[in-house]
Image (cartoon, rainbow, N blue to C red; front, side, top):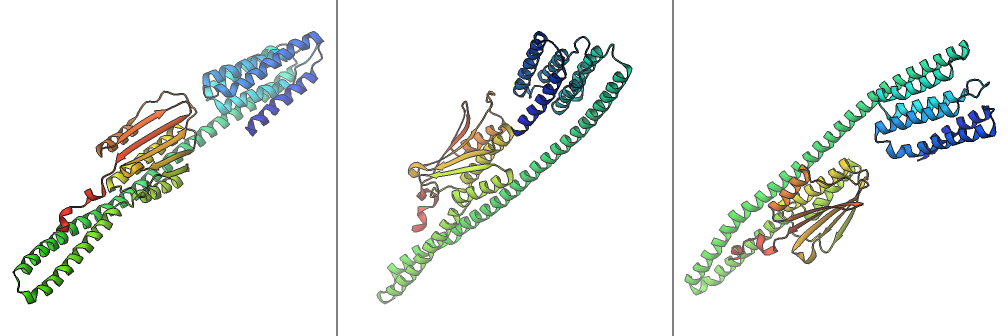
Amino acid sequence: MKLYWIWLLFNIIPWVFAFTYLSVSMIEMLWRLFGVAVYFIIFFIMPLVISKPVITMILLSLNTCIAIITLYPAQGDGFNPFLLLILSMLIGEACYHLNIRQVSVVASVSIVGVIVILWNAELFTIGFIAIYFIFLLTASFIYQQTKYHNDDLSARNDALLSEYRSVKRRLSSDEEIARQEERALIGHEIHDSVGHKLTALLMQLEVFRLQAAEDNRAQVESLKELANQSLEETRNAVKMLKSNDVGGLAGVLRLIRKLETESFIRIHFSVKHGAFAAPLTGEQSFVVYRSVQEALTNIMKHSNAREAEVMFEAPGGSVFRFEINNPVKNDNRFQEGFGLGSMRERIEKIGGELHVQKTDGQFIVRGLIKLAELGEEYDSDTTG
C-alpha cells in the first residue's frame, strides 16, 4: 500500500509542473483539467484489473492518449517536456505488469503521439526526444529480460523448495509409520505368543490344583498367582504399545507443528471435549494427519491467506471430529479435486465421513471418525 501512494505522488508531480508550463486561456485550461481528471480516474481503476493484462494494456494506452491530448501544445507554445516524464512512467508501469508485446503497444502509442506533436518542431528537439526514447526503450527491454530471468529463477527455486519440503514431510511420516508398525508388530507378537501361553499355563495349573494333594495346593495356588500377575503385566505392556501406536492426538499435533514450520503457515489450534484422551488407532491418527496436511496444502495453492484454524474434539468419546477453516477472498466456484477426493476415500475406508464447504469468505473441511470402544481393542480371552 505504501508503494501505491509513492507511485501516485510520482504521477501527480509531473502533472503539476506540466500545468505550470502551460500558458493557455481559462476555458482551454478547463478541458485540460478534465483530461487530467479522466487520467487519474483510470489510474485508480488500474489496480482492480491489474490481473488482466489485456485490459491493463488498453487502460495504459488510453492514459497515454489522454496525456498527449491534454498536454498538446497550444498555438505558439513549444513541446511540453514534462509530457516525456508522464509517458516514461506509463511505459515503465507497462514493463512492470505486462509482457514485451503488450509493452510494445503502449510504447508505440506514445511514439506516435510524440511524432504528431513534433511534426513541425525543430530538428534539435526531434533528435533529442528520439535519443531519449531510444534509451528508454532499450532500458525497458533490458528490464524485461532481467525480470523474466529472475521470475524464472524464483519459480524454479519455489518448485525445488516445495519438493524438498514434500520429501522431508514424506520421510518424517514414513519413519513415524515404520515405528508405529514395529510397535504394533511387537504388541501382536507378545499378545499372540506370550499371552496365549500364559493363559494356557493358568488353565493347566488350575487343573493340576484340582488334582493335587491337599498339602500341595497352597504351592500350586502360589504358582497360579505368579502366572496370573505375569499375564496381567503382559496385557498392560500390550495396551501401552497399542496406545502409543502413533502418540494419539499429541503425535498428530507434533507432525502438524512441523508442517507449520516448513510451510510458513500460521495455524491456530483448538482442542475440545476430550480430544487428547480419544483412543485413536494408528491408522486413524495417520488419516487425521494426512487430511489436515492436504487441507493446508490446498490453502498454500489456492488461497492468499497464510493462516488457518484447526479444531479437534471428541464429544461423548464415541466420535473424533476435526475441522480446518481458512479465509478465502475469491469467488471462484469450488470443485473437488484429486487431493480432496483421496482424503475422502481414506476417511471413508475407516468408516468416517468428510464434508467440504465453501462460503463467501471461508473454506471449511470437516471430518468425522468413529472411535472404537476401549474394550474392543483387546481380546477378553486373555483374562482366562
